[in-house]
Length: 321
Image 1 (cartoon, rainbow, N blue to C red):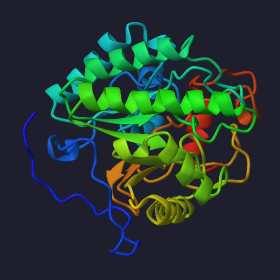
Image 2 (cartoon, rainbow, N blue to C red):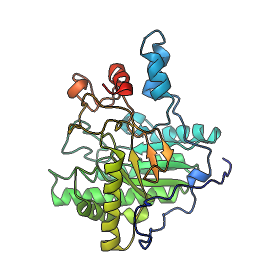
Image 3 (cartoon, one colour):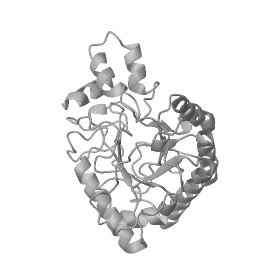
């Protein structure tokens, strides 16, 4: 990796300057250690395009989706996770690019929603898994999104289960900080329509946000960047007034080009959003969910499973119909 100095867009620019941003658990800035974001050469749209050159949709999917930097998700399907994250972060490092990785294997994952249920077999199994996840990244520069939906998915959980989940997240943050010192970690904070800002600020803080670099919004959802930015700023106002600090945030813009129609599971008529970049009203705008990958057996993805790439859905998402 080589050091490249560049100005990082100032996060949360609409907040009063008096709000103190809590320091990151990491001294290094991975965006200055790399020259842009990594394009996953083995993403589901990349694989589909490679196998379907003759398909009339392939050109558009290749140009508008497959070559945009996106996150790679890691879970039980990743096999030896330390080997998997090491290979991915290493491949990005060799070309001086910044990879975005999603850790998605928490015990009782998607406990209330169910479409992506699963995860580690126990809290101790998760602690072991996340330690290997971080150990694979090691000192390479990276961005990690920690456990999408984990702090919004409280509706059917008991207080004991909530406490257990928050403890797992706090432990994950400590482990990543220790083993992957050049990684920025964003705790997931759901989306503006899931929990009010005060509630989410409390959940983030209780789960250890002070140890993280920041928080993430809108993962796998469709809500506009403007609404997410307003919500992120509101969460920060609550963090400041209650706990005395604020944090940068990122927004998943992969599928929010047409905003939300109120449905979250494979709605029709959605569109890809602003490609991955620094700034844009947040610290970064990122493609975290891959456009065209199903949310589950629902909506226009009826008959599919969560994460399955659907080329017709991807193609229509390029044009917004």
